[in-house]
Length: 317
Image (cartoon, rainbow, N blue to C red):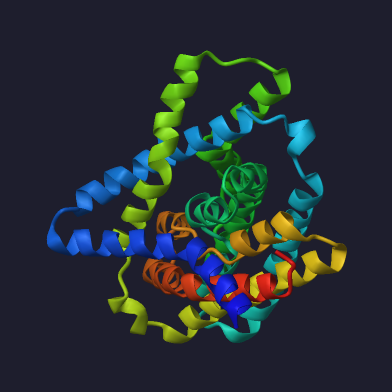
């Protein structure tokens, strides 16, 4: 009984702080201390400056050739692509109307790794978790963007300028720019001036608390009754099927400890908020995308805690 309580305490130490800050975001919006304008500006600040700075600082100060786990990153990308193909096959048989299929597929495989997934890893493993997750996050995020464009264009029957638009979106994505710049600095062995490092660290330290507050303030559970079946399909796939696929495959090929932990924590993170932005920009069913984000954000805290508890009990994480 004592061992189980210790495992449960560790699980709650990972997910509990996320839940508290998300809850504060909801509370502060309702009391008027946060406004919609603040949430919009804060979200843009995180996406364009704070999170790229966090990734840049983490990667640039790491000896990639010594610490990068390319087997883990390669497995993550392969598992993401396999999940994408499976979801494309399933939604073609179970989701109507056809134009909503891309929204459901994206909502099911695209994790909020940059904010909540990264927060999970930092809470679980500290600096080691940040280092292990940063390169994984960077390369899998590129794949997320490519596959999201493909599935949305297929379901919305939009083909014009797809490759050029996709390439432009990847090239101008602040997260990808921060990751590639960090890789370049790490590979070159360049020592950044202390003033640059400390200034960048100030922005990096803003990332998780500000992002989680804004995410909490953005949640809207009132609209979940609309299109409930499609929302539930995406949520169950995102919170249960995808983590099971990633973890089972990881165990089968020999990942243990922090590697398996990163796979669980990144794959069980809720649907990325960027999925709503992309759906809305491409003329898809934006309310459905928002519903999926809201339900998976709430559910992830429970399913991730359960996953951590099981892996710790089995002494795999």
